[in-house]
Length: 538
Image (cartoon, rainbow, N blue to C red):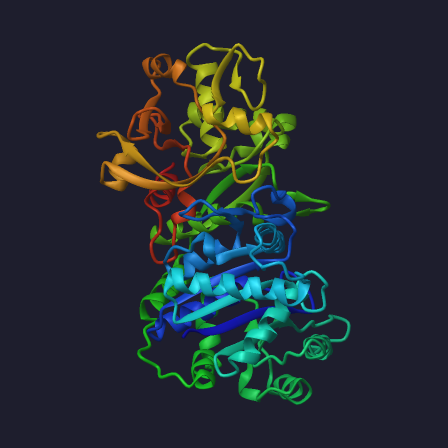
């Protein structure tokens, strides 16, 4: 029988529950336990696939093709293992399952009610994830903030599970302690209110992780212990850090792993964070910087610029940089700004990434960026939509197809070098968007003698996809004759998976998303090589 840890948040959203959950998982994994993590999103969306990336952040794709919250990416990067579709659920998916079961007489004609049937479905899904992953300890992150209507049913699931298994269920609250600059004192009152809100639904946190700008002092720990009814040893300090991979080590300063094992009455089988500590030390010691531009279109949210839409790309670039003993210096560049101001704003960059995206907006700015990289020998990496834009740029400016375009951008263009995948038309006609695109890990055959083959050092790879449009094979021979190298295809040679230009320091585009598989302890070879090429720029 497994042990269950639930992580919920207090005071405000974005408090860091995902990283905290991943860090707890890493610590317990280092103690010798088989650990897996689950994310519960309180959205009516059935999955994350149709969510606006500017509003929700990156859509992460699992190996088995589930479109999920970005926190699953953190789980994979910390645990260095795959997380599957069974480890993700939303309010919408839970309700959908219950309703479909009711329609099939799965409840044998009885009245189906929100409580207990929705919480019981949540518990059932958690247990299925345990069975799939064979986890000894399963950590479930509950999205949202304590006190919200949206996640109340998930907290009820925690209560029901804890009622039946009091010694096998722990609840951890990640809460925020503000430090108002005009007051000059870290405040515990919001956390006290968050705990009382939990108490009102029949739950008491076993451990409180206190997020703040600075490390908690003894007095703040004493106040939280007194007013929130937890042992002072169970108040864990979580100050802001420059590197998220520091967090497991920070938690261990307050003996978080030992406290969890003690509450579960479990032995410490081993403790081995040595490799992790070495990697963190290497990252901190890297002083040389390399300026990298990310040309996207999901940065702006009101007056603020956010990078959450491309978090896996950013982390993969960091992994590749640390492997080269340097630090990336990012510039977030909106593709529409390039359309307005031109490529002069790219002048001081050593390398440029054009990541994923959808639709017409900003496409011409991305194409201009790629032309600049190709002509000026600037290392370029195109991911998914970025690869497609590279094909269009090459077709227009090298192969002479001046009006080449993607069917997604201009369906009436005379040369659709990127077109809709054949099996996708039926979905679009029926307005079936969610979960219908090409998703998950697919095989890719690499062409010997190419740059990308030299990075993987094997002929067959598996990488993850998330796209509806593809390279149009009608133009394949022409583009190859003009100098575009098709370096990766599906094993049956029908789908183009990777392109490159050989007489260039680094010019690679992939239809797949290598960033999804880059891990802190195992940087992806494409990103390592890309950063190396950037460092070699004069």
